[in-house]
Image 1 (cartoon, rainbow, N blue to C red):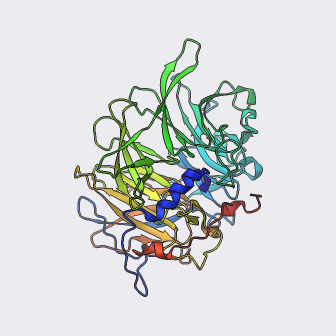
Image 2: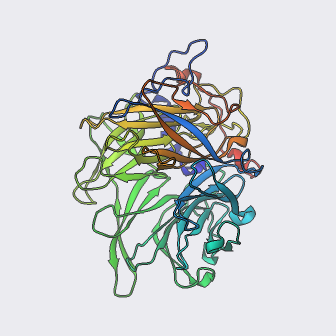
Image 3: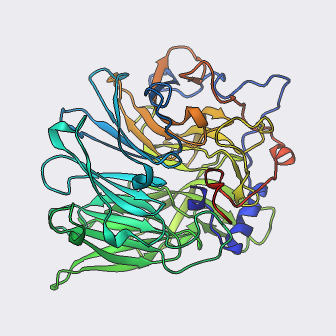
Length: 530
């Protein structure tokens, strides 16, 4: 999945090479003989009532709790009431092991009924999932984006969802197109039925990151006209042609009552708004491309520019002006190589979609790599906090993989490496765009693609649900229980006694200690030829 983040062009790789010089660097930490891990660090975050916030991990689905089903490479996650029992269930994608799984919930937060609804070649390198009722029977079906290499429709068997057969269709139009990366569901054309939006990165090699740009990727609108198990009923309209698009996120970004689509150019590191301008008399969706032009909300040096691949993005009205803003990962560059910055930022929407979007920094988790992005109110103070997750096993300096195994801890990995981290940024709500980072967990292995926020245990605060990859036997699905105490406790309590090695924060001189090994072959695709 790293190819979703790092573009293959030489210019993009050159920009990423400069990440080592980013400022500010990760929070300083003077390493002692036995430095305190992130998990063991006393919690500092507090609620408005003064309680300290820490986190307790609970396993939902992994080979240790599911009877030995070796699910690997946790990626996409979708939440909804699949069996119509009044409780939300989870559908998850596991890329490395080709599994689409469902975790059916119960009244007891720690009890789940687990099953596989697709695996093998049918779910080849499944990257993302969406829930949508395509056959109008009142039950949510599943649509998946598979990197190897098609879309997949799985029809909910209704009242037999927990044990019955999920009938499958691979739509013909999705074959021979290369890698499908993202899929979403929304009523785009306003006809009262949900459509799909999807990003396909075309025939760009999914292993080589330096293969060069291509022009056959597409961001598409997909209508299903009739029985979704009949391939001819699936109709595609290409909204945006771009080499290696990253997303197709539907959202009413301009507040005019219809859903627009956020697309992203991975190679060129730019966001584009596909503005919904309604349906023509001929029944065709009319759109207008609005490139997102980023200007700084702070003083910058000569030659400053900001780039974002927006593989993961979220929206919120951060400044309370009635317009949605964009939350993305941002790489800042300038003529002076001493000025480099990368991390999370929010882009303030102007009065029109053609106006510049003003960047406000949130923070970074360097040398760990921002991947998952999610807006939610963690501390219950009424404003918008941000959750993010890191990606282990990459070389951020060269824009490649490190070659580290996804199955076992590499003993050469240290706190100065790019590893798996979970953190959240507290919105201080002071009007000065100041944020405080709170680190939850930092491990040798981990990839945290997506987060869902819910009050899982019904105690009145927000918990977090996520998938985990890059961790071998520890891959799977989990939730983090928010724990509030009167005195500070350890920031994180793991679910397992034996785990991937826990690490402290990176030392201030992490760059001097950084392992620069690199490869352009993904560890989960070693059998492929470069």
